[in-house]
Image (tube, rainbow, N blue to C red; front, side, top):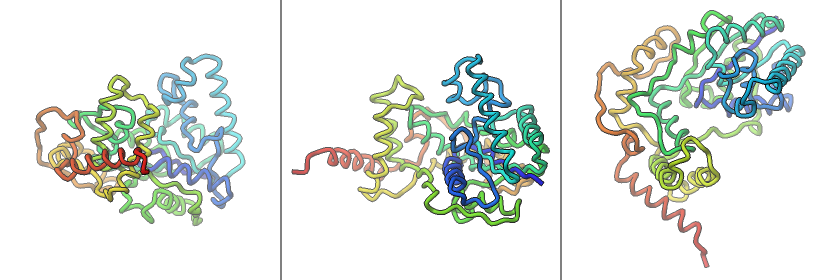
Length: 341
């Protein structure tokens, strides 16, 4: 019986680290009977969205390469399909991973499953990782600040956990939800956790050697978040959601600056914002606990947020010690740039 284990995301749940680990493990024959297809040289399988999604809904990076649904784009879709069919035909157990799969609507998910079945895969298991809403919101702020000085207001933040599950429910042999929290992951690692799930499905223990793993992105401190936002406001306020070399260089330097001053504290949302977000997600969280055994802290007490929430200092627990760390980071950066002799 041919099997597929389909990892459908979501974002900010270690997908890149998982995909790179699986990619290099397969490349070096370290996945045993399982195959992780090397689709057009990519480390992930997000390109498969082109097989089921209309052009206007495909990934932004693909659409930037093919802005029009013309013959060039159709030729690209054909190359994706050919490569996919060729890879799948040679194996009985296949692992697929694409965080963009969670963006499929019901029709697209059904069409994708149909493609897998047409290729002879009769047993399909779907796995999705979810991040707790407070942690997810904080992570999204950090991601946003890498290319912008703005982020979403907590009063409008709402993640569609159940919408994602509804698109895939009943389409495959199983639909499993796992919480992305390193304290709960098998071995504290996304790769180990995913392989533990695969082992349950195929009955074979798999390992990915340490040399094929990349460290997951670590969060910045509250002081670094404030510094990054101020930097974007000062120099790139008009370049919203646009990466630039200077910001990329600063992002690479910030962890080293934090280490140099011994800054280890990780950011947390201020209590009122955290409570507000948990309250907004309470109904979804109750369903996740009852039906999928994902149990997060739920707030049944409503709370009101007043004022403007457009500064990092308004949403994170930012204290006098954080402001002192902010100044030390700036001084450390200056010191590193000055001649020592």
